[in-house]
Image (cartoon, rainbow, N blue to C red; front, side):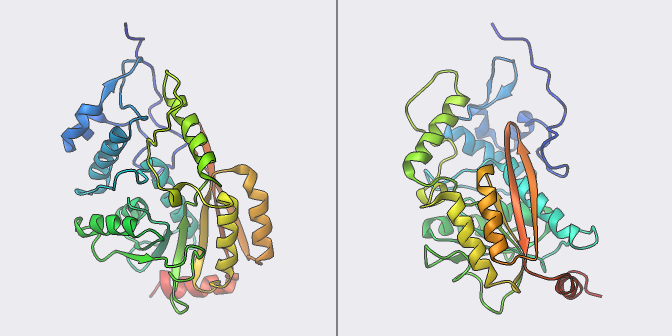
Length: 323
């Protein structure tokens, strides 16, 4: 016997106001654009349509449908066991990054292909560029240390006309570098975004995944299944998020005039103090922390710039607000 249908709020108020994902998933519309999703849709104990978020195939099918329905992406796929990220959270990052640029531009978000964003660790899914191109018509440079990831993202770009000519992919040849080897000394970009590897070891990553799976399931398990997938370089690195972002900050200082806003997602609140210390040591001119929320999960974006107010004005007048 099913439980009484759960009464939901009309909008997910923690999600960014401009997001296409504030309302609950419209499975009828999603099944219409991608019939294969039908096989994964089920009725939960509250008599609502949903999918099994512990099933990697179901998650991947939902992502395909969301990208098709909301962002006009007709061809999207990723290699087996590569990261299949939850799209609403990725969209939030892009929208908050747009607000960041807008707040530096008298409240007007700069849009158009003259605005360039680097996605550090674009992965095999190309999600951030897809959303940024669709929502703001920005240009993107996607970097990654993994050639398979870049090959997959290139296939996504090549088979979707709305991405062609707007997303360029670059291999990071040195696994210890983040900006070096990707951005030329004479190049300028308006924004860098980064979703750093969260965990500090494979064991810790697996334990985190197991906890997430057990939270999604009524039945407990000791079997690690990556419902959102993920390769080692996508999920963990030596020193974890704290060290990765500290290295990123240290390198960003040497590109202080090449980028207006450097940003990174910070999942763990406990890492903030050491990140603020690194930014102080790097002599960042301005630092902002932008809170984000997805359901019960809370995270934030840390953003920093080395440009003085005078240099920011010169950048705006030259690149964002041409006469």
